[in-house]
Image 1: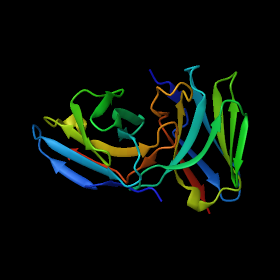
Image 2 (image 1 turned 90 degrees about the vertical axis):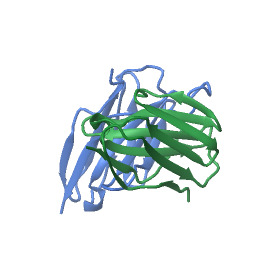
Image 3 (image 1 turned 180 degrees about the vertical axis):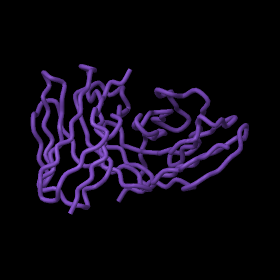
Image 4 (image 1 turned 135 degrees about the vertical axis):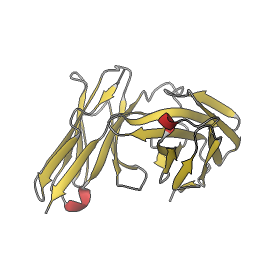
Length: 112
Length: 116
């Protein structure tokens, strides 16, 4: 079974803090994705990566950056957290050419 | 611009009856569609998919129908069970070309509640 692991289930941070959300997948998938889920808005793509050190902006990249130094790990970085970044963050991975994405359990981030 | 829309935020169904979840899309480049199910405190899990070359795909109790001319798809669950209570997301992607990197565009989700 594909396993996508997000390092934290719940995080509480202060406005202005730098926040790291970590995601690891164990199936050697090339593609990895970061989404946020908000009520009434569904899942919105923040960033994705199709290879080590490669990254592309998604639909809502403002205020976020990403890092992919190793194939299995994809990190989402909030350089200076703001209250409007309070959300559920979901990481996913997939193989190239295949459309099924496998998701982690999510990290619920609260920025106070 | 919401390219994939699920216009019903919630649906309530009696156990044993049919659940029908609907999804509309606007981007004519989309040619592969997926349904995901999400329980609270868990990530979405893949349920069923359909390519634009088909108009129906069935997997057990779950059937997805695609109407390309109307840019509409629906998920039918028959019979519905209390364990089906979850949030259902439809998603779409332009499958061909290899440059989409498997990017999915998701709808807003529909909360399904199946009552015993």
